[in-house]
Image (cartoon, rainbow, N blue to C red; front, side, top):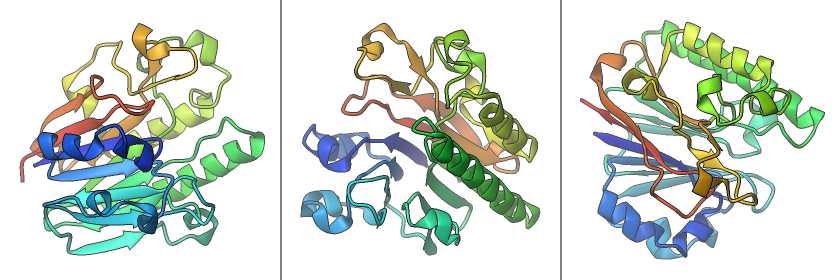
Length: 254
């Protein structure tokens, strides 16, 4: 089973850049999108209902902001939206899909760069999410978490770590949260297969950073430890254009 995740920075924008043909050609079993910036009713039918897939959308109460989507060949046993916490769920950041072998969290974590208030919101979201996932793991659930986490974990995960030590996305407290998340029993799947630097998933558009590969790895697939033996590959697809992020993926033996 192949799972892909992509912050599209506007689903209607990537639609105009060949998104549907790309989905049909790449053929993932599950595709998770973040930062869709749209409600389902605003999408053209061939985007809302891609052939061969069931689709689910969560949007923010604020128009043109945030949002996540799920396209899946296999109908989930259950779909839920949000963390069950109103203070976060009005931003449309989470879709939870339950399959026979695992529970999938498609998450667009908040960005903390705009202000101290947004950084505090991001950290509160992190804490609530960790508490929820720890409770699920304690019940023996098999968990997959994917999406834009908006933090580079280690120095190897961004091109210019020293210059960004005081920038949200690489702050000590943000990185420490990822440490705690991994310590709680979750695995960064990409690092199961690749320990090299220079592998990024986001590049600043304004500075033309992508052409120079001056990027950040802030998009992740995590799995609970009990699923790790079933992950046969994890990868980044930097050649796929259309957003300031690129897709990431895993292959899972089910």
